[in-house]
Image: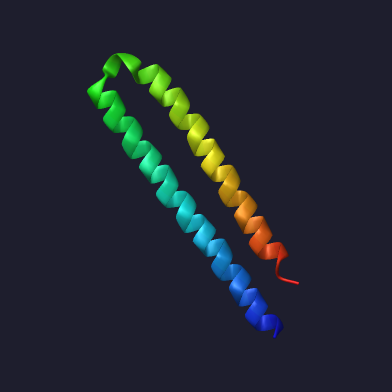
Amino acid sequence: MAGIVGSVAAIGAGLAAIGAGIGIGLIGKGAVEGIARQPEAANDIRANMIVAAAFVEAVALFAVVVALLGNG
C-alpha cells in the first residue's frame, strides 16, 4: 500500500509542476501581448508579470510539498 501512496504523491507533484509551467506560460504570453499593444506601459506590465509568476511558483511549490507530505 505504501508504494501506491508514494506513486500518488509523485503524480500530484508532477501535476503541480505542469500546472505551474502552463500558468507561467500564460502569464508570459499575456505580458508580451500587452507590451506589443501598449509599449509605453512595458515597465508596469513587466513588474506585474514578475509578481504574478512568483505567486504561481509559490502555489506550485506548496502543492509539491503537500503532495510529498501526504505520502505517509
